[in-house]
Amino acid sequence: RTPKDISSNSLFTLISYLLSESKRSLTFSVNDQIFTKSDTIKNNMTICVRSTKVSPMLPPLVNSSNLPSMLIYGSSLCSEIFEIMNENNPNLSSYAYDLLTMLPSIKEEEKLAMNKNPDWETFFQIEKPFLFLYRSNIIGNKVISRDSEWYDKFITTQGASKFINLVLNHSMKIPPQRLVRLVGICCLITTQNRFEIYKSTFFNDFPSDLINRLVSVLGKNNDTSLIATCLKFLSKLSQYQEEALENNKEFPIIVRGTFFHKETQIRVSLRD
Image (cartoon, rainbow, N blue to C red; front, side, top):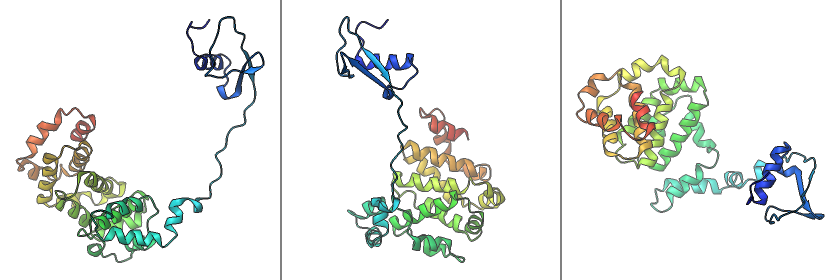
């Protein structure tokens, strides 16, 4: 029995369910003519159903070197786009940065982060905002690669503290959509298993003025992703900086404003 006004497509779905077959493996016909889902079902109609084995469709093999992104990456265009990004052109640099984030990291830039004696002061050039964002992505990728030797060096050579200090010091000047990514990398750095070795010293020495800046960002932004990400980072250092938070006049207001926030993401971050 079928509903009176059932469509052809719904009938096909019902039949495939009853036969435990996929619709792709079934052929429907009426009077030896193929019956499609766009055809109309009529009274006293006899529909013939045939099942055929369907070979699984394998995705076509793709030569990655022929992908547009790889063709750009392997050509002089890549360095030219990188130069446009570094020019801080108000009309073009953001597009150049977005395009470069779709390509593999430039090897010369990766080598700077992998240097045996890294100069983080030179590497993190906050005065070149798009270069800073680009190199921040390299750092984020290295952190999640779980290269413990590199990570230990990044912490002990003050790379992590330098990066986090720059992000928070300039947080009021960075657009929310960019800042949420940067604070996310700060969270990523401080949530690795190996960070447990350094956590106590790192957060005990954390500058109180940076905590105040982080709280100010929370108080002056409505972006839910940014608020949740800042709260997540704040939760990491709160047990080491209780006095600084207690002395911050904005913090109780922010707690009251976010404790019953309609966004679950923010409530969970505050709970943490």
